[in-house]
Image 1: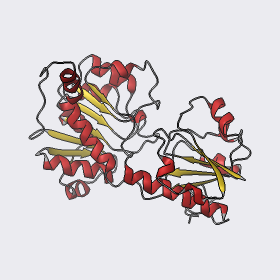
Image 2: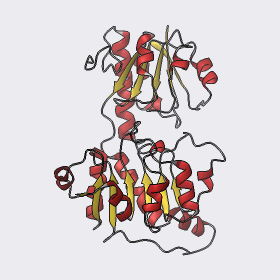
Image 3: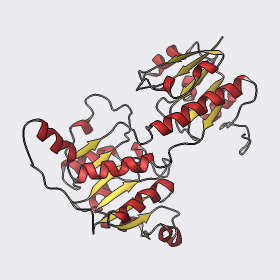
Image 4: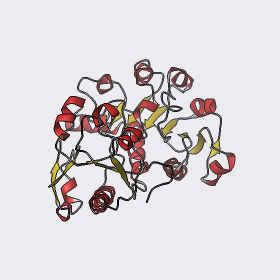
Length: 323
C-alpha cells in the first residue's frame, strides 16, 4: 500500500482540515519537527509520498538521494525554496504545489506584531498577570511613517492598513515604480530613504540570493533609534547578528518577528533574550481558512498523482510545463 507522510503537523490539525481517508493509502501524521537530516531520512525511508507545509523541512539533494521509495512531494503554496527541484526531477520525484494560499492572513499578523511591539502588549500583559500595572509608554502610529520593503500583494495590504491608521506610507523594492506605489497610496523612495525615514519598517519581499542579508549593519545604523522593524517574510532577509546588535545597542526601538534563520527557533537562541522584541512562531499563514484550503489541495494533488495524472507540477522538465 502507498504510504504518505504528513510532516511538521505542529498543531495536530492536518487530519481535521481534509478528508485523508479518501486516499487509498496509509497516512501518517508527524507533529514533531526533525532538524537533523539523518533523522529525517530514517523517518521517511518507507514512504512513497511526503506532504509538507511550506518550508518547514528542507529537501536537499543529500536527503533526496537517501529516499529511493519517494515518488511525490506535495507542498503548500506554489513555491518552496527548501526543496531542490532539479535534484527531485533527476531522481524521478514529482513536486506538486497547492494554490489558494492565504489572502490576507500574513498581513493581519503583521499588524498584530506592529501593534504588539509599539504598545508593549506582551510586557504589559505579563506585568498585569504578575499583579502589577502600567510600566511602559507606547508609540502612536498616526502621523508616523510606515516603510514597506516589497510592495507586492502582502505589502500592499499592509500599506492600506497603515493609511487607515493615519500613517504616511513609503515603499521601496528593486523594481518598484512611482505609479505602482501611488496605486496603493504609498510614495516610492530610494532604499536609503526607506531606512532613514521609517518609524515602522515592515518586510514583505521574497527571499532570494539578492535579498538574503538585505537588512544588515549599515541599514540598522541608518534607522531612527525610535524605529521598529517587523519581519513576516523570511528570516534570512535580515542579518540576525546585525539585528541582535541593533537591539542591544538601542540602534532601533524594537522588533516584531514571525520568521527566523532557524525554525523552529532553537532553545537558547540569542533572540529569545533580546530586548524589546515580540516573537511569534512563523504563524502568518496559520489560520483555519488557509489550512483547510492547503490540506484539501494536498489530498487532491495526491489523488491525482495516484491516478496517474499529476497536477500543479513545480519541477516539470521545462518552464511552464505544469497543469
